[in-house]
Amino acid sequence: MVHGLKLVQPHFEAVWERRKPFEVRKNDRDYNVGDELALNEYDPEAQSYGERTAIRTITYILDDTDYVKEGYVILGIA
Image 1 (tube, helix red, strand yellow):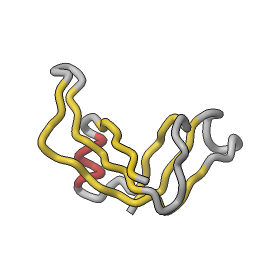
Image 2 (cartoon, one colour):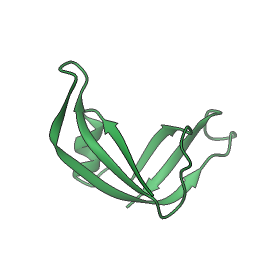
Image 3 (cartoon, rainbow, N blue to C red):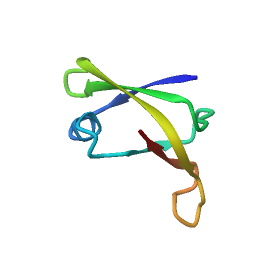
């Protein structure tokens, strides 16, 4: 499964440069280890997409409410 998602700066740049190996997301999709994230560079002020897309694979899902706000997940990505 491929999940197409918007990602704004500076978070997109950190993922693009592989300095940010995780994503915090609302758990409103059926995320699974092995799924891919198509993280699309997005400018909310211009309401437009940039030219870059970072493709990352979900390697880990943390959804323990002792560590993550209820309804959210931290996705390990590589």
